[in-house]
Image (tube, rainbow, N blue to C red; front, side, top):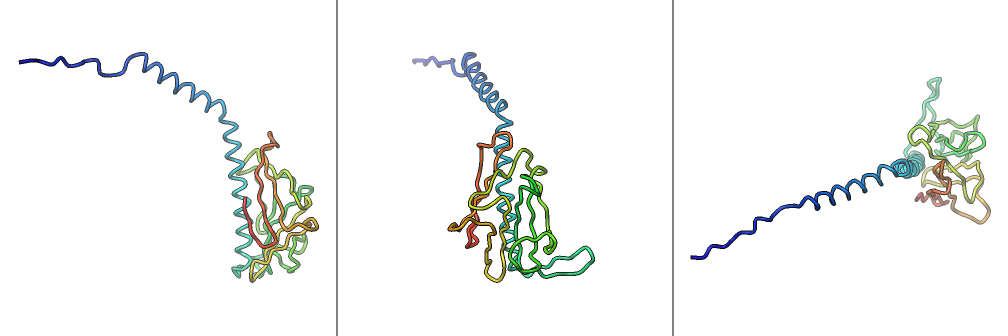
Length: 188
């Protein structure tokens, strides 16, 4: 009768464990060292999503038949909703969602109702509205019922799409762009 000798060298060697620990340590160090940059990239992505969602909310409110209640308790039915950007007045971190009371399809300070003023520095610190392409720094994007009729004020002649460029404040070359066209299409 023959007996087989079993190989008892199964397992992991000390060198293999050291190599694995070294690889994990190096990867962890790279991730931790780059965490502030990763956090800002995530803030930028979230800010783009927030602004896009606010644009889509204004668009859907325009045909929902919703109403606004003024501070004196009066109920008003807007003729549309919109989003207003003005870097000279609001700065590069704020924008307004408004109810178009007078129906002129643009934001007017004394005539329209401010539904919400958004400050990007609160939910997403370090993010700015860098610039607006195909328009001016004062921009009103208005949606009116019944078919999401879209009006973009201060849009450059011959263009049908405005580009809202969002950037990381400490790295202004790192940007994401939100596009809105006259047909009401919103994308990024």
